[in-house]
Image 1 (cartoon, one colour):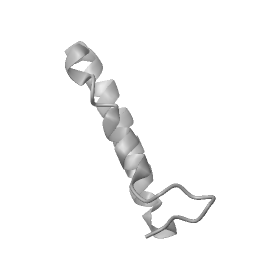
Image 2 (cartoon, rainbow, N blue to C red; image 1 turned 30 degrees about the vertical axis):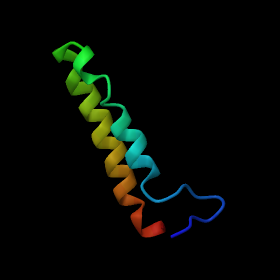
Image 3 (cartoon, helix red, strand yellow; image 1 turned 135 degrees about the horizontal axis):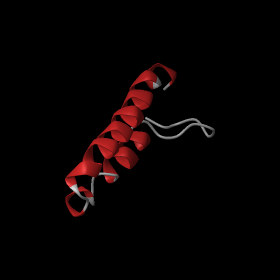
Length: 53
């Protein structure tokens, strides 16, 4: 499946969102909630845009 020129490839936002967890083990536990909230928002946005693919 190819993306249109002005649209990101399907799943690109998901990969970028998951990369935010790469250094999670180096963060204090108190900062994990903020990171998980940001991840949730990114994944929700990717999921809500799936119909536009």
